[in-house]
Image (cartoon, rainbow, N blue to C red; front, side):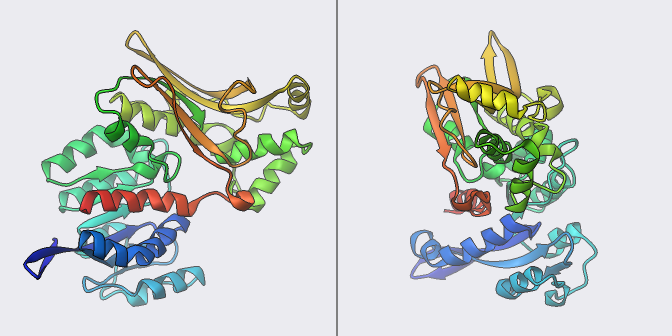
Length: 356
């Protein structure tokens, strides 16, 4: 539960935080929270401690009085187990949720595009225990958005997911808060940095295999790149946006993506000679009540807002009945290594917006 304490007649709020998943994004979040703790206290009179951590390969730990987050980071990043930090033995992530005495959970377990599990059950459990929840996981947004939002409301808590699409960019909140009663007509963008890097490097003369190996070398692409290159990562992001922004449940299977494996060096060279380039374009449009979606390679020319998004740049353009085109672009990152810090910031922004 929340632990209020009194100072000069005001109530300050202390939050116990549970981190379910402790990969690159969650560790970046932990560091960001520590770095911002003084300004969080001075501006919003909010303090926090980490009381639960669940990792995939390095054990679990809880301490209602606060875990040593720096020690946890050091242990995990040196390949060691964090269980020694715990005040009690724990078998799995569910036990962390139950025994952490947290009132705010960050859910960052691996994405399951087919069912949303185990993140879906993690979030259900946390909300039922009275926690606010923020997640970067697209699975529970696609497979449980209505249920989780209703459950959160019934418990007087909040479920947020800003980092599920385009990292820390305010994709969901801009439509929720900056465009009240605007009717979304369509969106179009580049949602997957890995495929954009591959296509950009192929345009510079590399083969598909060479460009893919580079993306894997810098940590942008997984050892098994299927979700990226076959369009499934982009598809679940399209499904998440449709599910939330149009309140219309959609799965990545319904998006039925086409990936970039079929794009050859010859096709890239021909497009370049014509002043065009290939992009893995994500789109959705509402027409007479029907929603048409797509994820597929498309040729774009310099008149398109997508043309200049090279390497790891990603972005989206919304079209509404009142603002014709509103774009958000995440520019190319130094070294093109992706953005755990950006994604972590979306989680941090959720936390601040909920507790302030």
